[in-house]
Amino acid sequence: MELKQLPHNHNENTNTEFIRKQIEKVDNFQIIADTFKQLGDTTRIRIFWLLCHCEECVINISAMLNMSSPAVSHHLRPLKNSGLITSRRNGKEVYYRAADNEQSRLLHLMIEQVMEISCPEE
Image (tube, rainbow, N blue to C red; front, side, top):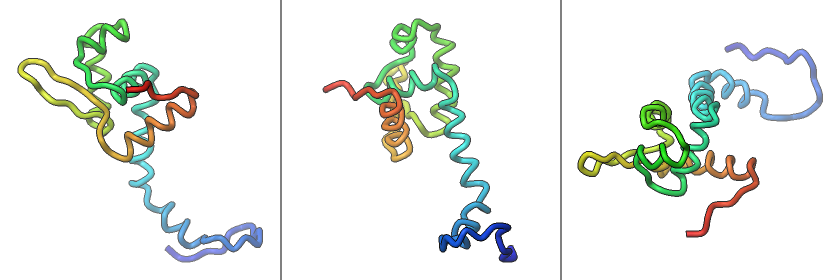
């Protein structure tokens, strides 16, 4: 891309070229948008927050949220596909928990800071 002068010069010597190069990477911004879409639903936020604190099966999640198992499964699928949660099978039962990655940790921290709550003591 050709370097163009910005319409307004505010005499702020920022890293304009670096910013321009980053802003052109639309795919990176799409990843972030897709992640936040997962948390655009109150139920998904509640499920994600719950799974940040414990590993649970669909039946227990359903009971805690007073929802049907199919409805909970419907919300778990996109959370898992986005990498925010993981699952493990033990016989016929599948257990879910927050993924052990930076993305999940940051979202967990953000939720708790916005809601002004703390993790329960373990």
